[in-house]
Every structure is written in structure tokens, then in C-alpha cells.
Amino acid sequence: MNPLELTGVIKRRDGFTLGPLDLVVPRGYVMGFVGANGAGKTTTIKIALGLVHADEGSVRLVGHDRVGVVHDQPAYVGKWTAAQVGRAVAPFHPAWDPERFRALLDWAGIEPTRQVKELSRGMGMKLQLAVALSHAAELLILDEPTSGLDPLARSELLEMLADFMTDERHSVLFSTHITSDLEKIADYVTVIERGRVVASTTRDELVDSYRLVRGAASELDADLRPLVHGLREHGVGWQGLMATEDTVSLGRRAVAEVPTLEEIVVHLAKEPRHA
Amino acid sequence: MRDLAPMLRLDLLTLVASRKMLAIYVLVVCFLVAVNGALVALPMIGVASMMVCLNLFGTIENHRLTQLYGSLPLRRRTVMVSHYAVTAVLTCVFVLLGALAAGVAAWVRAEPAVGVAEGVGTLGALLLVLALVTPAYVAWGTRTGGLVTLVVVATVIGGLLAFGDNPVLAGALRGLAGVGPEASWWVLGAGVLAQAASLVVSIGVYTRQDH
Image (cartoon, rainbow over all chains, first blue to last red; front, side, top):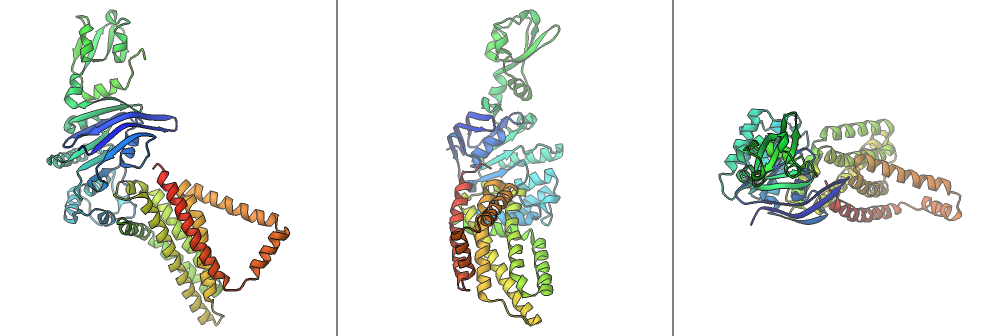
């Protein structure tokens, strides 16, 4: 059984509609969940955790005691020390391992007596990760964990996730708008834009299924325009993202290149010009 | 309710974070009781206990603890039961402290002691106020919830003042004024019942909320 499955989820809130949205985090894999700020990533995660109620659709999540969560900001009392954070959450988890928690605090460079409010953003993220990894969680749900971190902290956090994934029963849902993180660790990628999933497949398939195309202005006819995502026209030609299968209709002078994940996400965020 | 004990502990840890404020309240109350005598002890301790109880909700809001609760194996019903249990027990402890302070003040100042009835009545009144305020705090947060409570209380008092010369209301108020100390137990009973009803309302509100 997959640790997390959202099926046909819809949430309407303050003029924004999320979904209909399907999202599956397969057991043993890292699912990257990528989209611009405000695309609906955090709302989706909150629905998965039961913090927000979906108007329609269903959510299947392994037991909460087997889920580790890293929010975009630590949700702990600012005056709590790191050790008190451990004491606060430990009784909820029968599999809590105090030795591992201490070791993770040590790895994070957080003294047990340091208060939460004294921690930098990176330290706060590491503290949450230490909590998430101290109770034998099978699924990690991470909401923008690398946002605002310096390169070293990001690298350390990604290494810790890679270590977590050495157990084949473990899975990760990793929400971010920093696609370079996903290049490093994601097996699957789901792209969300304005509340809708615009792509969800393995990272390699996603990259294979699109091409970054440049062509002469004369080739851009009415049939081609609807097929180009993020079409940008300039003096001598145009460029945009196309489905690989659509590139067969291109003329000889057009150039198709393999895009980066970031280029795919950026271009998919822009509807084809005709839409 | 296997998750209640951990949640109670979590609530207590949340309150412990405000221990300095708690200590200041106790010192201020002790000072005022020493200066003004035993009669002010219970009202003062009542105000202090109300502030501390409502501080729990303020801390939860300020530090987004609802998100923490959502990431733990914890039912929403349990969260509310724990909040109510902690605030009710805290109120009892404060009233006991107030009664103790009043007793000491009465002995030192050679004044008449505060009776059990006053303590019981104070406890009942505090539970009644908490029962009114808590669902508003849960539903709208501490700022708006506090404002809503103030508006409701002001409306009730305004209504009493406006219709105070109504014969039926005036008769009821005279009747209340004439009741003896045994009525404080009725106030306590009303407070306990109000807490139960308030808990049901708060669970309903909290269960349906998005965080």
C-alpha cells in the first residue's frame, strides 16, 4: 500500500480552487511536489495531514504515528528548548528513540538547551527533521524545507533525506519551488500550477516528455501556437516548451533541446498562448 | 483516549513556557491582598487565573501549535478535552491559592475570614466565564474571540440596565440578591454544566475548522 494517496481532492477557499487533484506517494520513493508560491502545495499537504478538510475527494494516509512532518516554519513554542520539544512530542510516539533524537540534535549543531526562538531558519528546519526522524517514521512530509536555507544547510538536509531513503520502506513527499533540490533526490515529480496538477510522473520521464524549442518566426503558425507552453516571441523567432511528441511537426530550422526540470516547471506554469 | 495523557502533558509544557508571567501574577495578587486585605484576594486571583487560562490559547495561536497537533497522532476531540481539563484544573488551583492568601491576610490583619461559600462561588463564576469565552477563542482566535465576548457581555449588561425597571427582571434580581451562601454551590453547579456544554460546542467548532 502506498503511504499517501489523494484522489479527486477539491478545496475551494477565498476565491482559490485546489484540484481536482490526484497525488500518490509510492512506497520506497521520493515524490517531488513542485510549483510556484501560491500554487496550492501547502494546502495539499495540509489536506493530506487532515489540517484542512477537502470539499470533495478522499485522502489515504498511513497512521499519523508513522509520519514525520517538517512544516515551512517550526510549530513549537518559542520558549521551548530543543530538549523540551523532544519531551513534548515523545509521548505521542511509542517508537520514540531519545538517543537518536540527541544524535540528530548533535548532527544539526543544536544544543538541547537552545530555545526554539533562538534558532536560525536552517536550525529550525533541522530541529523539525530531528523530531521527524526520531520516531521510526515511514513517510516524511516536507513543506518547503529548503526554502531560505544557505547552500550548506540545504546540502546537509538533502544528505539526511538520502540517508533516510536507504530503507526501501521509506517514502518522502518533498514540496518545494527550488527544482535543483529535486534534480538531486526526487524519483517522481508532480508539478502543480494554480491548484491543478499539470504533470505527475517519474523525473526522467518528465524530462523526456518535453523539449525546449527555438524556431524562426516564419514557422510559428496557428497550428503550432497552441502546442507551445510559455511561448516567448522576439525579433527573429520564438521559443517555448513543447511535448516531445509534438515536436515532429516542427520544421527543419527549429531546434529542440532537452530541458532542465526548472525550465519545464517555469514553462508549464504558463498556459499555451491560445488558452 | 490513549492520546489524552500526552496531550495534557503538551498543554502543561505550553503553560510552563509562560511561568514568568504566572509568577508575576501571583506576586501582584499577594501584594494587593497584603495591602487591601482578604476581601480582594478571590476577585484578584480570579482575574489572574482567567489571564493565565486564556494565555494558553494565545500561545497556541502565536506559535501555530494547531499545526503541531495536526502532525501528531492525535484526535481533534482530544485537543479540546485537554484544553478544558487543564484550564478547569488551573482555575481550581488558583481559587485554592486565593483562598489560602485570603486566609493568611485575614489572620495577619485580624479581619473576618473569607468563607468557603465565597470560594465556591468564585470558582463557579470563573468556570461560567471560561465556558463563555473558550468557544469564542476557539472559533475566532484570541483577538476576535475576545472582542466577541466583550460585545456579548456588554450587550447583556446593557440589556439589564436598559430593562432593569421591568417588574419581572427586577423581581428576579431582588431574588438573586437575597439568596444565601448556599447559592454559591448552585453557581458552581451551573459553572460545571456550562463547561460541559461549552466543551461540546468547542469540539464541534474545532473539528470542522481548517488550520
